[in-house]
Image (cartoon, rainbow over all chains, first blue to last red; front, side, top):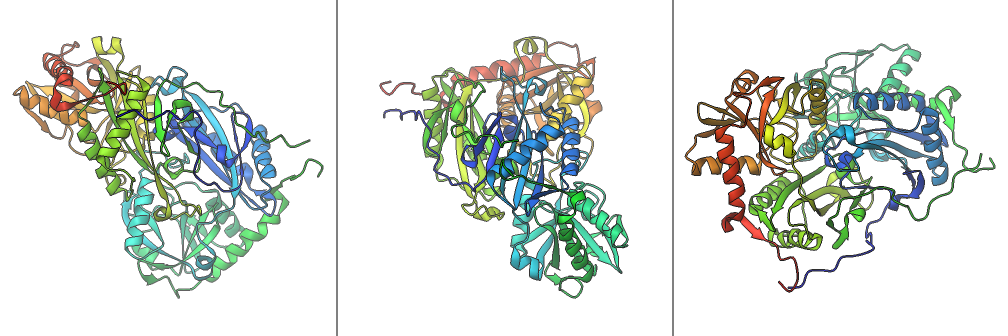
Length: 313
Length: 313
């Protein structure tokens, strides 16, 4: 039996969303936004990233995302050859070139590889890349209107003793398996526990419980989300009590309101937990207040950075 | 300030090892072995893989790697459009086309993406890929001769309650941080603990302790390595006791011999732990016996599958 031919020019049969990526000093279409299968960012999930969003032509709180990204880099012993201003310019250019008014903008640093393909991570040349694609949300329009249905998984979010959750990372298999567990329970998304059996977080979001007018969110074993941080800031402006605390699955189930926060969608309601209504089973008044202020703040110059979509603008 | 130009044809400035990859029905050079940054195999490390090796022109125990790969796929709700025989043929072709007599052959299934870029993993079309590059080893020649220097990290390997370690996966940030901890202690590699404080595994390898002629390895929270399994099989042939058991850090430090197992290098000695000699501080007699038999077995037809390097052969 003859050996197959080697294909000299690989043909990509897949489709991609519209958008612009930056890698190796080049701005390219999403079809070309690829990494080597040998990059340790893939082979060891040895990478960190951040996601900022653009809404109505402006970045929202980009400074906080940049701050967290540089903190994650340091914790992983990684370096990028750009400072904050340079990264801001690259992110801006990806969005401007994409033309997207509402965009999901991810910036990534992977361990990369060493020129000699050494296994020593200190020898690797870290790689920086960015992509800007259409804005996405954890909850779709219907779910935003009626509230998401979630299941509390008995799967434990990867604990802090293994992976520092303040480093934004791609270790999601626990979350993905939690999603499948949730589907088995006729729910739409999952909330995982921390190693003590208390509520941790879900796939791409932090969790909030409202009880007797007070807003609470887990403090241990969770990503320090920028939207989570924004909820704290908004609660302060709204004169609402908002604090980190342990939340047991029972406490979450007995909350008056439950909502989640993510750059992908902002604040989003959960109205069913484990097949049972949360509170009255409808969007709660405190959630509605926070949500309104969250979107209003997108036009506040203090929290937004406008995109110049054309060179002449 | 004008916006930058979009690059129509991305130019890749990086170098790659010699080898052949398979993706989307095409056999390509390693320069072209890439995945989209949007593939959930990257963005969520939602992928599984296996690594087989070729030594002196033949696969070693490929059937066991295939068995584990298909088991991992099932646990992750993933599918590939090939059966075992078809995958065997693809792996074979990658090696034959690469020309490598000693090769490291990785086969991967990623979650992929859905055509609509839905966040629901059930909508994604899983992707299968393979690459064959030159054989690599955890321990270099010098380390094989004198033994590796390892440090026991106080970092906890991602526990089974979060990610099932029998699914071979890319969640390595705990291992990578363990390596950096080891470097800080002037060691060359790290051994991580399980959530009970006992020995788990290291970056890419299982750990064995020999005490009073008996071989022991952790059973909880570790990858069921194929080389680990081979050590059990070899010990049976050598009439040595080999069993799974808890091993505390103290027990490992007091072992007569310590060695590790990995497809990347076979069995490899550890002669220093936390700056102190293991046993006599030299390669142990039981390790040497197992290592000799391990390499001898590579020419046993029962455990090997020869590569046909040319169509006429």
